[in-house]
Length: 500
Image (cartoon, rainbow, N blue to C red; front, side, top):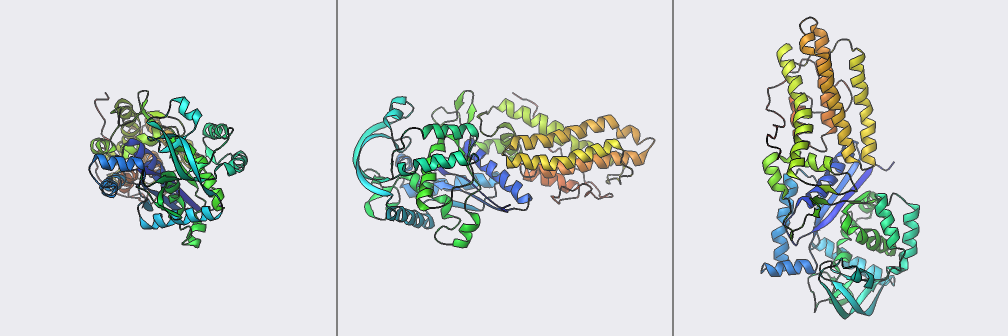
């Protein structure tokens, strides 16, 4: 088994400040990176910003700034958000950085030398909103905004040349495009003739981009520039050892709206470069409010910084990871946020910590009791905790993050029920050693559950492990040390009283 895990997010467009959609993908990548690190894999997590293209140029003009000033102003907002969200990336790339500009020009030169770029006259439809030329069929679909007819000389990438190669590859590698319905969508798209891709824009029309190395009157099409970031950072063409270590990427995480550019444009570009394709491209759904995708024009964008301010970073991370089934859309409402927070975090997780620490405080002077003889009830809890390690690993490998979280919460609920049934507060009156065994079992199961939730809630779980006097992220049963003094603590997740 390859012991490396290289995960990427899309590089986000800097035409506006970050919102919950950006936060979701980046937290998801962070959660997966943390899970893989805890499995002792060598992990590389890349995110960044896409700073070229017409929309960036237009956004800068509206603000009365140069495109570079506009990008330099917005970039820190993303960095601040990632810091506030406890996102631990390994590299943050900006496509205006010299290391990336040089790499894009190198790739253009290589693809050109391979005979896969040619010059031709183009007459057809151009979507300003999508920043790409569209087909007649796409034009008639009415799905594209701000469309105009353009007639100009441009450079084209021979994308169609690799159509059958790509179809064959997707059919032989079902794991390449996920989930399955997105794979079928791309195969459906590839049933029609795949045209060549216009990869240039004349400077006379749009000059904010990377200059073509073989024609200074043109800049590179933003997608031919942006996608290359995935090989720029691991060292393509510069550090062969590093590049061989990390490429092909284990996972490109993307939103479903940029699936075609990744599954078709990027795949064919890699074929031209004779590079292996990433192992998996996973297209997740959108966050909706009501029936609508969040968008600036509808005014329904949720600012993650506002949520963090009010409810704390870990509750936001938890909700986003638990609520969305990867591959499907999810609905964001404050009501569903409050309900999820109260049921899972306040009533189940937080309550279990309060119960065990309160009972240990009352009957054992706040010191973790020593377990004596494990009965069938305690052995059942231990068996479930040990079995869960494998099932959670299986969920993570299959990108079922919400199910991995639910498995952990099931153990927490079982332990809460175990405490109710065993009633150590009653047992303590006549059999203190058995009460101690019950409380040790419940507290150790809480510790193991907390370790499982670390990737999702790194801050709060550290707090719990500190309270329990065992900050080791090991999942082996029995690491809690009897005699450890538990400090007094605040409620882990105070209830949200008004769920509406």
